[in-house]
Length: 125
Image (cartoon, rainbow, N blue to C red; front, side):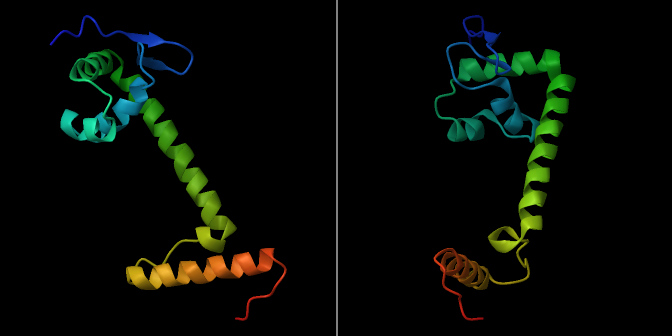
């Protein structure tokens, strides 16, 4: 392994792999959740082993900072999900106890109703 060739640089989007569009946070998301290189490479096929190793080395020196950023990103996503659910409609919380087929049927019905309303017709209830 020659991680000396791979550098982590700052180009305005946070630390990223030099010459690559992936940021350290893109890879850290999976690392922080316990995934290994093989799994991460399936999600990011362009990530080489040397690039992965360079990110792992960077993480060793910046772990607490990256964990904090990951927590902030997760909170941001959770707030967005909560806002979508609060608006109701097709984004409302699904009934987890229902079978998948029934949830799909309910979603189709909601989408049909929304489309009818958008087109000026009232969908019968």
